[in-house]
Length: 284
Image 1 (cartoon, rainbow, N blue to C red):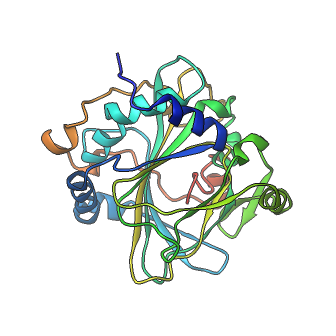
Image 2: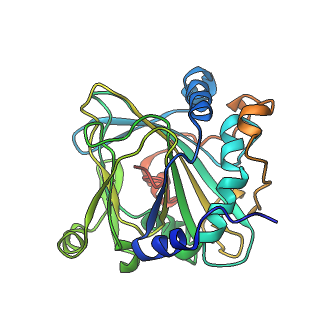
């Protein structure tokens, strides 16, 4: 039985504005271990994909589906993570891991991401219930306005799904609706310290600017689905397999495998990415 990690006030805030920020979700020791593993593990580098924004700037990402016995798997399977997600998702079914990705926005060259909703992509996978999908971003480095932190439109998850189409190699939301939302709701810059977590609804509109600073912006983003939410156009299977939860101390105390065992997404032609609902993969 999972303990409740969030307060009733945090749960209410999530449903009201479409996201919550948890300060110090991971300790600095945990973040240092995760970040060093991302830098040192060749599997992460060898499976990184480059995606272009409309100006030609690139963001690198490595995406995998099944959470393993590596340090990132221990984070995505941790009790604090699954407990938080479970409290916020709409239903009693077991929590499943859809995919995780390491986002790497390098100084000066890291690209922007267009306005989008994660469910704008995942609708193409034919997931039935957007309230049963959620994303958790943990900052591995500082995220601020200077290095292209996430921007969200507070409360925009209440709009429902907005139409999406291609913008460069990304999939972006219909800008008429985005501009209407910006006239109606508050724009928030989500500035995070290493170890802070942002948890957000699959229909929350969000974007980020290019990283024109001298500092990198790296984050790990894990996406979850309730087992009660079928996907009728999804080839991976992790989205329907309940997470094997591990204790919070696993990141620091358990032996960890190499990420080479992970089932990474391989680069395909763009129509395939769109069909898979990974034209942006919920990218930020």
